[in-house]
Image 1 (cartoon, rainbow, N blue to C red):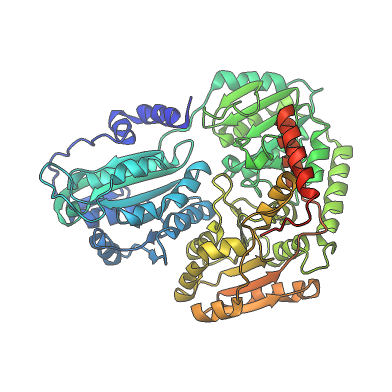
Image 2 (cartoon, rainbow, N blue to C red; image 1 turned 135 degrees about the vertical axis):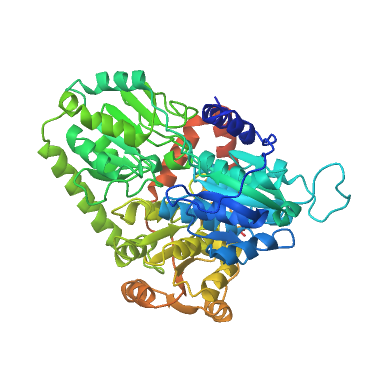
Length: 623
């Protein structure tokens, strides 16, 4: 079953009209609705004689979106004016590509559905990468994309007249096409229901621009949420496995467990189970919990997690998909039993065979397990707690130890930054060679406090995301760790932080290269190709965008430099002059071993001959 097949099933369960919308078909034309002079406060929705633009803005307000991100244009100026009229928060991004990224980050840190608004054509196509990240990372966002006039009487040669709805379908769970002004509010409400239903993800609402200025009598209440799935029979099978007191249990928790932190900690204590998380799931159990062992549980994750799970024979995976990046090319240890709990039937037991696949919401599963606690309770295991404490303490000491002296040691910098931002701070980490060190070194005490583009791996994503998060959570400190290559792709979005006085802290790890690619290329090809980057004057760039700036050039500068950056009251750009030579990168070593194991004998021989021939030729140069 594919992701879209599963979503079709969810749509069908929600009603025929919703299913039709999810498949991109026409919504039913509304009947004329009476005007209601009084709207009871307990019945939120969109009511009254309104323009299509104002109905759209009121629908988003009724959904409680923290902010709408985007860029206005000829086809959606009516909507932007309507947002200002009703006081709906919005933010102008510097580039359309940032709009869905900021909406995504807003959703991740708030737990609500994010929202963005763009014009058709280049507005939409510029945004595809960010929407795709939300799709693969299962983040609920809704995009209001205006369209050109459609229908038999539409003129030929309209500007931006791409097949906008068809383009949007390639990176979303569902697209609702609106053909009548009376459908606008209903389409937005249905989009939010689908975006939140399992698995969460992006949904598009496409509205021809001429409908925004038309007036209609609306009486559209906010519909109920779609109930999460629950497989009672599968739960019973899982309970039978866990009832055996001889089984040693470990829990692997992803972002799908973000709303179940209390239940997760209680279940871990009930089962005396070490808890490892995915990268996106960092913080679903506090990192200082006695049973928290860090991220991953194979050779790619923390050593504490790898050691703890070697003594486990039964794994409960909660809201975790075992995706390629999070497992270093599916390099997952085998255990006797895997109870895989997820709201997406398409991922259950797919990458790692599951003894018991359970289609269920993680929080519901844990609540039932706690209710049946007397059947599965384990006695306290002081030996386990002692081992976890010792391993985690040893790791923390290693993270703070200076092992790279030619420039700043990235691992130590990340550990210091994670502590300086505080337990409530929001950490955004981009796609760099240091990403996996960050997952080890930065500790979080709550979910939605550590964010990275996990499965679409969009370079430069974190810069825009951190700004969107700061706009959504102005009460919390926000730090972004990006690479010099990533900053080249999205760095001008920092001007948005300056314009809006958003005090985000941007740290650029600068070594003058796509070092991630160099680490992958050199072992296979004996050389690097197209990885050297220009040296930038970050202080001048910061000054040009109205940002403060700072440089951390050595290990001696790290503690003071990080403290100064975090204390600065406004946005700041910090260059961190790093080197990668001198530390083990566990994720990369695990990836290499997994990759080589999967190669055939002929492929291995060809790679070895190529490497040896190039090693014997010192004239070959890297670039």
